[in-house]
Image (tube, rainbow, N blue to C red; front, side, top):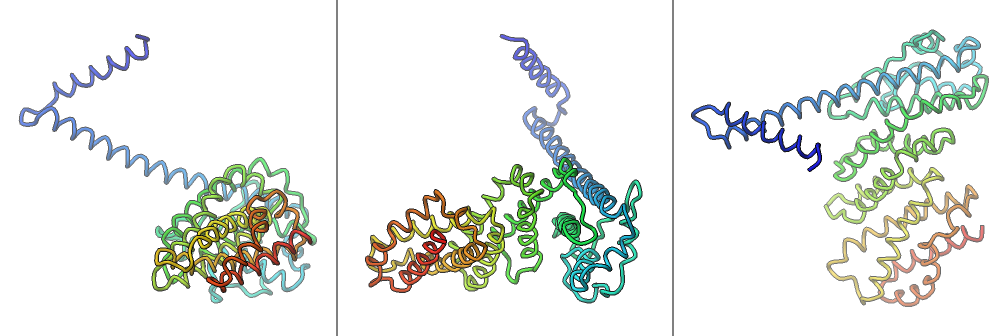
Amino acid sequence: MDDQTWYLRTSKLALALAIIRSTPADTSSREYTEHLAKVVSEQESTWRSKVQVLEAEVLQLRHKLLLSRMCAEVFKSGDPTSQLQAQEPGSSENTLSQLEDSGCDLSNEERSEPSEMPQHFVESCTPTPFLPLPIVKRHGATVENPLFSHMQFLQRLLELKNLTESGSLKTDLSHFENDFSTVSDSVFQLLDGLITFYRKPKFPFSSFWADAVDTLAGLISDCHLSNHILKKCSKKLEEFEKTLLQVILRSNHLNRFQVQHFVSQSLVTLGSCSLLRKSIISLLLSEVNSFTDVLATINQVQASYVTRYENIFSLFWVLEQLLQKETKEGNTSSVVHDDQEIKKFLQKHDENISQLSDAFPLFTLYLWRLGILLNSVRNG
């Protein structure tokens, strides 16, 4: 017996003796042990909650510090007011409204006039050692929506990076890459929240969730941020994509078409990022190929397949949107090259249409349209 095992057994024996000696006279040792275990468990739960609150506060402070340092770098060589006014009027209005507002509140009442430079933003961008960039809590920052601070930080970060990539505020922020773990941590938590929501989406849907997916796609499209995000969050992103797919396929309640439209649009938004498009197309085609094989074995849609048959058309719509975007952007080789699901679809395309056209004419029509798009992408 090694020393570690001996000390462990000795400690357990000492604990058992201590419990027996301290057990009240009107209570059995078993009952007293269960009572102590419950007390310890409750204390552990309390401390765990406190740790989570402290971790959230630390991450929020990291948000403020990173934004402050980046602002100081952007505006250190001149007056930020005059530089922003030199931009295009439309661009300036959009930038100011989104930086003044978190991007989560779409109310026109809270937007500043485009001709006015928000005073707190000018002050916050003054290059001081510690810049006051508070995460302003609005009506969305509630216990029910703990993701608000992450969304606000990520949207402000995107706006700031957009400012630095064009015009008189053009700045190289690549030396902040060592601090981008803060961004990855927020994206990870945002993905966690998105997965939780989309597993049981509540109708009507808040625009917050659509904005969150759009922000996510924008972050991963950024060449400086994408590597950091994908390194930490690739598995979470894959889980999120699969969650969206399953929500579409399994939806069978009365208002499912509203749900499907909302979730399908989220997949299209996510696929607007070229780095994610290939995996989404492959995932959806895998489901189409699988269901095509099922239909090839039956003569009509059986009761057990009715919901899946109806829902599959939402996948066709998403695939058409993504493939059209791929063709338009001219990134065809990135999608088609060595993708097994695309190869399987095209190899059996004509055979499937011929075999299924009589029993499932609408389904084969969509197969035909999808085949044209995939061949266009492959030959583009």
